[in-house]
Image (cartoon, rainbow, N blue to C red):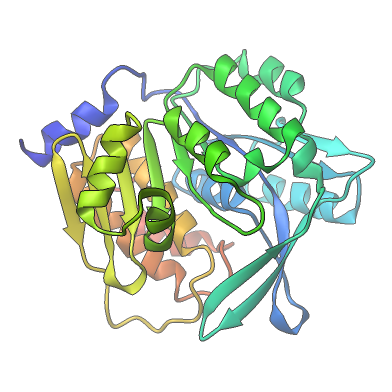
Length: 308
């Protein structure tokens, strides 16, 4: 089957014209040497989608504190819709302490943050006014009972196909909850280590077995500097990562990949094009510090290639 047909099969059964719905944590990464960077995988994905012209609806919760004010101001300055940002007067805006070893990040996620208290009913009331094309969320949101319940309410109300970005951060995950999220998804993204933990091995055969066992249309496996694979109902496509880049760090590269994957699904790109462009953008994110870019000229490099 040709790549164009494969992408069309990924799009079967949903309306790609609606806004993407992004649900999950907005937080600050405390980087080495005291630098603070606004992030969180859902926030990073939404930031990129906004730059790509898709106007995502972001459902999240931040503290009624200075960090929460700063997060809202950044979103507003980027032109993002902040109607889904809840404020919490009892819990702080999320924080993560990040350590870098040769550019590779290690994340130390703090407990009981504002995003762990997401109000599902408020989120549902807002989503009812929309017809989302796709629902994106990470697996971290299910670490707490309150946020997990809110996520269930969001899924039920949105009635949209789900893309789960698997992020297995110890000690904030367990196999049962992660597999429950996976079983509700149409697409998932994992890295090699996560595929090994969930499927027992990191290879394509394990990915295909896992895809079938959990009723997934597509599983994306990222492999760091060696590229990535897309495994779907029609087989697999592999591509190498771009070379010759002046690497700064890999923080947010996977989130950039996810954003372009969503863009490609909604735009109907061929599978090969999705993979190549997602890797290209993820590579570009490795040449800048942090997980987002506030320079619209950075994105225009890709828009000029007909991405948007």
